[in-house]
Length: 77
Image (tube, rainbow, N blue to C red; front, side):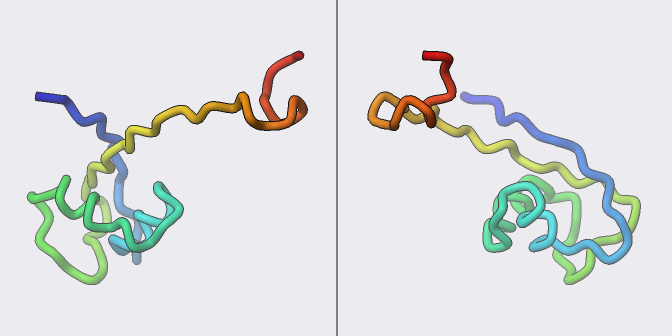
């Protein structure tokens, strides 16, 4: 069993699931991940102000940069 890393977010007035998805993932359509991580919040259009929402951290695989030009590799070669 793997443990998912979660960030805590305190809801500000007017925030919605899709706003948080865009803020944390850069894609407003990834809100399902956030909804699934927060079964304690009933689904609503606008989230209740002051509530703690948990944001799952995505596991990103590092990419190989060996095929990139040297100036884009991020190394001091």
